Length: 211
Image (cartoon, rainbow, N blue to C red; front, side, top):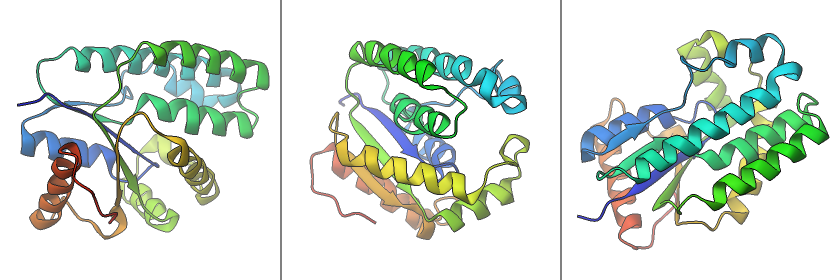
C-alpha cells in the first residue's frame, strides 16, 4: 500500500481536528495535531498580540516543519490537522493586516517561511474544509474554548477571504474541497463514509465533486 501524507486545512471551527481523528481511526493512519496545550507562546500572545505575534509565528513554523518531516519519514500513512502553509498565507497575513505583525516582522517571517518550505516534500493531498461564517461561530461558541472567546465573525470573514485567495493559487498537490456545514461525521456514519470515499478517490486520481 502506498504511503500517504494528507493535510487538513480550513478556518477555525471548520472541523479539522475532529475529522483528523475520525480518518486516522477509520483508515489506521497516524495523526498529527497542532501544538496548543504545550505551546509556550500562546498565553503570552493572547495577553499581548502585538508583542508576541512574531515569536508565535516563528514557533509555529519550526514546530510544523519538524512535525511535517517526522510524519513524512514515518512508514505509515499520516493525516495532519492544519497545514504549515496556512500559517503564512492565512494567519500571519491576518496579523499583519490587523497591525499585530508589523511590515518588517512580516517580511522577515515570509523569507524564513519560504526557505523552510523549500526543504519540504509535497503532500499527497490537501483536504480543504469550508463552512459559512455563522456556522463557524456557532461551533466555536458551542465548544467554548477559553482562548477562542475573543474570536469575532469579522475575523473569521477576513480569514475566509484569505483562504479563498490561497486556494486559487495552491498547486503543490491535489485539493479536495469539502463543505462541512451539512456534514456530521461525528454522529452520522454515512457522512464519514462519504468523506473517506472522496479522500480515497482523490488519492487514486479520480475526479471529485465538491460537496
